[in-house]
Length: 116
Length: 112
Image (cartoon, rainbow over all chains, first blue to last red; front, side, top):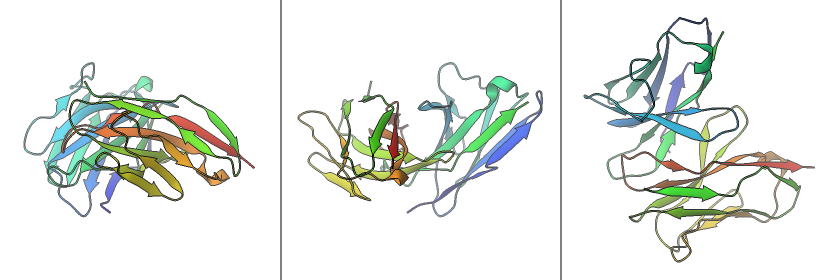
């Protein structure tokens, strides 16, 4: 199966700092990647769709200036949480579909962000 | 829009008990259906999938059949183990390169 990695797996930062999370498709190219946020004991909430070569599409209620997404290449998307606050603490997960028309998606292992 | 409804947990079972987690969906097209599992502190792993009506997905003793007539994709396992304790998500994919539609997840705890 396809492999998607995320880095870092865990990060603790001070309030007001910015944190970058990387999502990489290791053995396939992904023109689209998805970023989700998961609160404790809840389901995944889609934050945005990351598109290689164009701007990300954000879901309603997600601040695009706070959660910056850059799809730098066909194998890398980054999510930067700017000026992080404690309420941004969460589990962030990315996913990528393998190939056009192939609707199975592969998930990264997730990044646990804790903002102090 | 598309949606997935799955039974709410938590579900607590004794080891070797039979498991059923109900999942129904609404979709305008011909979606693919998945069950993903999330173990504590980890990301999501694909458990099984079915891409068309009457398909049966199976893996690690778990099974689910894509029932178009009842718009259902119930997850079953004949004999659960403690290691099956996790959160299970029923998921729908309408087409390629579109976001997945998640159920709310069902937390399963299996006790010895």
